[in-house]
Length: 555
Image (cartoon, rainbow, N blue to C red; front, side):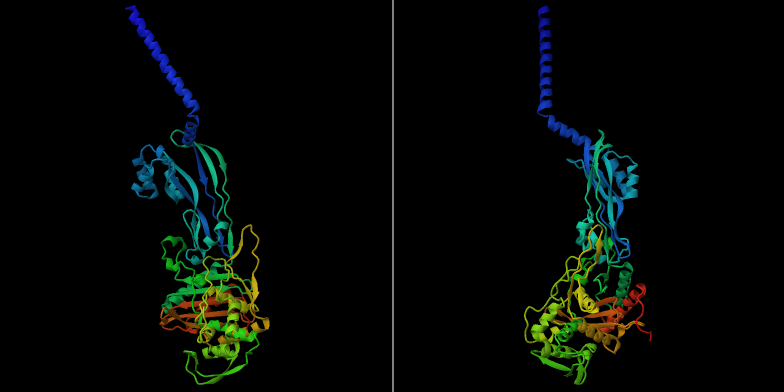
């Protein structure tokens, strides 16, 4: 009996020794082979490195009014492994944040990760209320939500920044590198329930740079209002206006109608998000005649008083060119040709004086057929004829068969207002902490010739020319009307026109250039009838707002 007991004791001791040996071997294996992976797993469960988003720079207008800025929001995320009661917590979070319960529950029950968004950029007040619930596994960090406090003002110019604060369109895209900051990061320590208990390390974020524009929000808002009224009055498809300082190239307003609230960009019809002033091309019509007349003057081929005998219509190869209004054959000077916008006169100057090669030279000299270089994405260079037939000399001098952008046209008239010196148009005045960009200029016309052209453009408005509706009490105005039928795949489209007026004011000492184009107006379509009155309304407001003194007595 004693032997049996002793055997059992020895067997038990052997089993215990063997068990301890296995445990010691397991401990040695864990301490050596599995040490690194287990340590990493423990660290992952107790530590988390979170990004600290960098604030996006603010976009200000010329007088310091914010047009685009970051508003405080809170991002809510969850560690699904730390959630104790998914269904209950999902119902609570959905109720507080105003979300669908099933979407929140999906986030709370996601496997294989310690980070799932519940809501990006939630309203700060709602997120704060949810934080007070102390739900297990829920975490919060501050972010910026991009907002546009002026709503529809300059919406197509500003563009949009998405949920990750990356610029997606407009100046937000063009200036994304400057506006975007450098994110920071923070490492936190968590308890076994996933709750943050301490901050181990923190690297602060560096905010993006602020940007200051040349646009004045009051001038911009007024231009948009005038365009809304103009589009409504003429039942037009759309309209565009540009206000530019001819001595700096700074854009004071770049307006389009119809517009939209920039805060609603993701849900807006893409057709109205386009900045028509920069990306769309159209045949300019008679506003292009300054190229023909200006080139002939600069080449010393004509003077303002040079006269031509002009019939109502002429044949140019296979086409007939005629004036807008029926008239007898008569003698007109170059000044009268521009004042009365004679198509026959402009084509006669081009055919008999300039010729194809010099006309091409002056088209290039004025800057058509290439981008202006404005600081905005997606600028079109315009369209010039790739081949010149016998009839091309009969349409290009009067602004047909060529396509331009509104910003090209506005910058050319700004050069005429600036003694013939062209300055690259721009929307950005400066970026915080960066040197001012170098001004890019080129001479289009000699000052003497430019003065002659400007005086003739004054006659378009003041001497019973086609731009009489652009007159302003107390101010001299120089300008040009344009009426262009829209081309289609099979020729010009009946009843579809673009009406344009470009004005310089005051003519004696130019302060502003204002361009207005109205696409597909109904009831009337001449630039002097549709676009010139809109110019007068925009210019009148701007002159008063900028306190530009009158340069002539009020009649």
